[in-house]
Length: 158
Image (cartoon, rainbow, N blue to C red):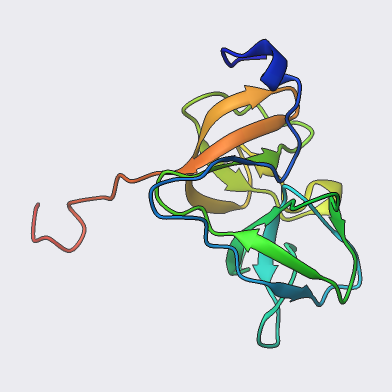
């Protein structure tokens, strides 16, 4: 386990907002349109209808954010509301790592799309993201949005 505060380090859970940044938390409400529950701390895909979401299951999915745990619910059943956090500037959230994940502090986060690990974070997932790991605690990782943008792209630089 990393992290400086051993007491708080033991209190991590998937879907926990670890830090609210300067931009405020952006977590609109969506309805789970999947036939399975969505677990807190997993990445969530856009559903087929307006204001709906579902579990991640394809490398082509449009990712809405991470299922944020508010209150006592860590599992969001079909046809229930949940809030996928979009991770605005300066915010962090705790995500579930894939079973074989080797993520460590500073690593880029990718999303797994298959089997029991679908929607989890990994070092070798199927969907690239602009998030990176800021801390690790067992099977959980704290992630943040990378503010570094490829400056060569679209600037005329060669």
